[in-house]
Length: 113
Length: 113
Image (cartoon, rainbow over the protein chains, first blue to last red):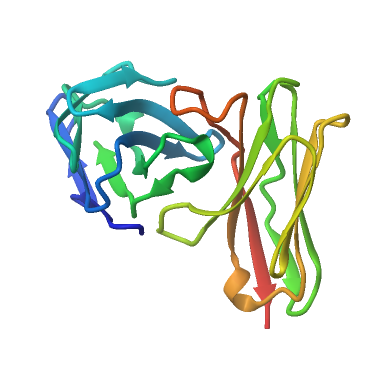
């Protein structure tokens, strides 16, 4: 998975609790992305980062925040988890930011009960 | 209507068959067309990308884009059981990092030995 790890790999949490997912890369790529994958919707972009402390919203950013304090780490936070945020979350990285060179991590399966 | 439509399958074929996977789209501005392979419980893996129209071949895989029909295809020759996976198409207007990548929902392929 192109030097990308995600943690945790599985998590079950209760509605209303905060949750942070971590993406760690060893490739020194500038661009990092968070997607969610749901049946019937495909992959949808939540947030992305184009450098340390530089982030922007994606298609489905409501209820999510991100932070990137180091090149290698990109954190996704659900401030107050809801059942609609039950999903599989994928991190992706890109060196030059071209849409045709995004490499995905192994995913985090999050269940909000 | 979704911007990208993909038959979810499942598609079951015998080993050695030629497989045709397809996506249709509605946005005529799409110029970059990608195919990803996703094994169960894994992250998507980039297989091929094509810019604008035409064909691109890589080993047993051929990607075709017909912009006049807004239709893209991925052909797999001499299919193998190891090709069993979900295949995702993805598209974008431009190649840069700030441009949205739109994914299809994926087609599940099973190659029977």
